[in-house]
Length: 244
Ligand code: MN
Image 1 (cartoon, protein in one colour):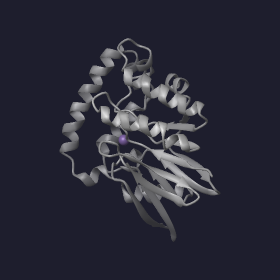
Image 2: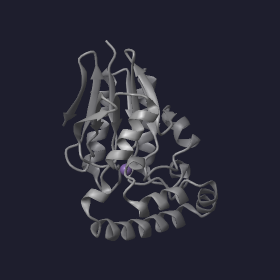
Image 3: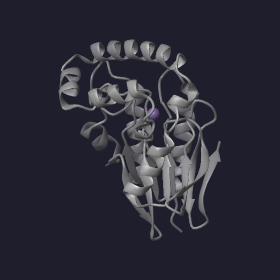
């Protein structure tokens, strides 16, 4: 029996030890009984660079998470990690320390002959123009090169500043702007030629039905781990959302 689990938006941070505990429990329990674990972005609250794992100013939690994933991968579970909008600087150093493989956003996987599109979900939120502009900047090679040339402590300080600013911006925005755009969703189903999609980012866990060019399609949205947290399990029974 092949079983894959999908999680996203854990936003792991030393500030929320309960969530980290939940994550390490999950790695030792449900995840260990699966064949594959897909992490669809925002595993970390933020990732300032792979020197989180090696620098003296690095976050000890980052090393614990990498080694927790490493034990899981050594136990034979295939792990794939996609970038989220918080941890898009995860790179080779993290992948080799954790035993996880990089998962491009988007990726189409085949499960029992059925294609499923996986994505973080931020690219579907096309109504949030400020965010999409910031995303283009932050994903550019120039911005990343410049940012990574700063010391880790400077990067931590810069990220704190960005987080404060983004809290104010988000509080001032109508909720629907930060949800997916229905045209972008239909366009993604078409472009990837799939009937099923799994993503996170919006923190609105659900199963949505869409009709795209006469086809019945379904879109699964993963839960965040700010609250109880949970995952999507996919086995021969089909996909279902599980809350802790
Ligand atoms: Mn996100």
